[in-house]
Image (tube, rainbow, N blue to C red):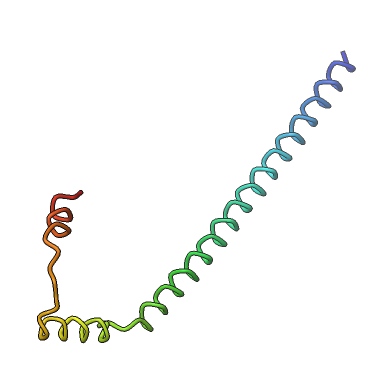
Length: 92
């Protein structure tokens, strides 16, 4: 009878140890996921900052292109490609 009680106590002790190890493993995994998510967030933030910087440095109006188009219109050399416009309107 005493042996049965001792074995039952040992089994419960082993079970508690396994549960504790499982909880620790789960906490480590959650922490690893959190760190991975934060690293991804930081990396995404860096990319957004880079794109914002690029956008700020890009001229709002492409003055060279505007000037060329103005000159072509004034000279009468500007041609409208109606087929191209029609295809764009129709989604082709």
